[in-house]
Length: 119
Image (cartoon, rainbow, N blue to C red; front, side, top):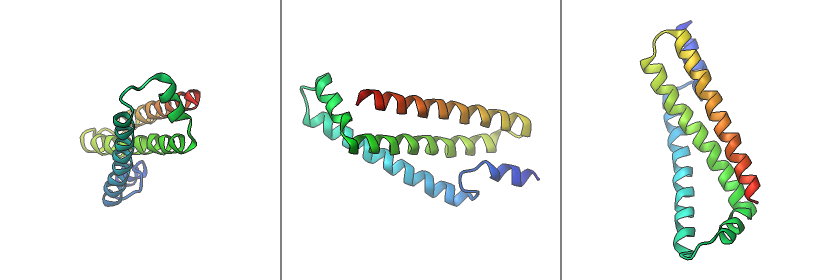
């Protein structure tokens, strides 16, 4: 019962797959960071209008949304691993995991709201 409860809240139900998925999400986050870095380097005299125009383009909105989702899932895999390793009482573990999921969802939807208001 404890083993099933432990793996049910993991992303894929397998430690190796979780690790690989987390590395894939980190790759998406790194590529997004490089795109933003390139934009800032190419626009040294950046103003709000240019910044807003950049984020109004559909491709950057979709890429930002994918990156937000990747950040959410990347964080969940990492936090789930730490909580599972170091918090032994099941009730406390599930409470912390539920709070983390709630917090990550709030941050995700807040990020989506900010993204679509910029457009």
